[in-house]
Length: 396
Ligand SMILES: [Zn+2]
Image 1 (cartoon, rainbow, N blue to C red):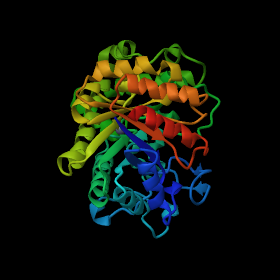
Image 2 (cartoon, rainbow, N blue to C red; image 1 turned 90 degrees about the vertical axis):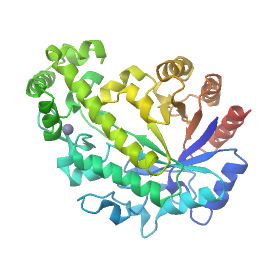
Image 3 (cartoon, rainbow, N blue to C red; image 1 turned 180 degrees about the horizontal axis):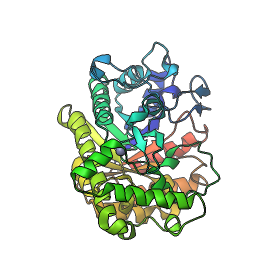
């Protein structure tokens, strides 16, 4: 059982990070540390960071200096965060963590990227109404695919990483945006309809496969136009495969399969770079309900074949309901791929320490392969005790 801590590089100060990492390894008993590569929001409040509690950041900007040659001939590059200044915080942090014996990984956000999307709307999802969703990159777009493959190449060759954790891979939804304002009640089905991509690349791939994609687009457009007037039956219905695949006389099924093939081939491209060329592990974000993965275009059988580990996030279920979901993931994925669970030692997601430790026990009882504990500088200091207790429970 591996236990790693997920952090921001901004949690640490250059002159104290070595001793902090040593403490995390030797005293807390952690096996590894995982650095979030891109800023998830415009403001980070890190009450226990070693420097700077309020960090105003560009959402989607990265904490490393990209090596230009990796992006040669491509008109996009990761955008370094203003917080980096002239430094390369990811390099300092990964090297120092490695020196004290921690395993090191990087969390790479794939298809959610507001900063690149705003600069290059042509790379983003274009929905059935023709609107661009600027925070979502389309996984069918060849430049997006090349960009992601080169970014992971840059990371695995220039930083002492043991693994890359891929997040937000696939066709994401509009509500992925954390500060969305609307008076619409966006049900999962409405969110799904609003976010489907019909960009020129998705369109072309569909046409090549003989899918009547214009019919599918028109169906979604009509549904959305009605939904903007009054709630519709479809927008209220659950997002279940058996129902949705039958829409538009089976054309929906073909479209959903096409999207899964597009995302699977993108994953294969990233695995080629990370694992086959550079022998680093690939972890991919899964879901507590594997049967819902098709919604974002993930084929669970391909996922099982391609990834070393699947990471599921426990914050999506009440703490006491975690065990059946872990069992379900084991049943679907078997032992072919490792199962990792992301736990959040924060009152935002679990009511108290007991509830958190109950989740930890569930992970141990289900014999998961690894646990990612999320948060360090962003947590209350008293919650650091929860982490230490979790590590000793998992390691006992
Ligand atoms: Zn598209």
